[in-house]
Amino acid sequence: NLDSAIAIAGFQVGHTTFLDDVRTVEPWLGVNAEWEFHSTGASGIAGSPNLDPFDIRVLGGLNTQFSQSVSGTIKADIAGLARSGYLTGGIGGQIAVRF
Image (cartoon, rainbow, N blue to C red; front, side):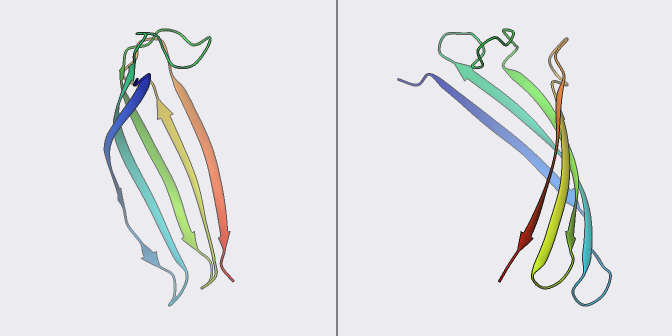
């Protein structure tokens, strides 16, 4: 049985700027169209409101390359743009060290 599923289609655009031979900065923006299916017709998260299954999410961030072995990213998103009365967002970051 398929209890729940989500389908996401979207795109992201960014532009990489080289500060030197190794270091880069890349701001980016994106948008996703999201569709959720729940076999019961209710939202898949306990205690959450019964929401429209279609939503729009806007994303943005900044990717950086500090050296050949260290990179990082900061990103944020806002969802609920197609759902009346329900808006949510998030902020995150990551640093990667390769050795």
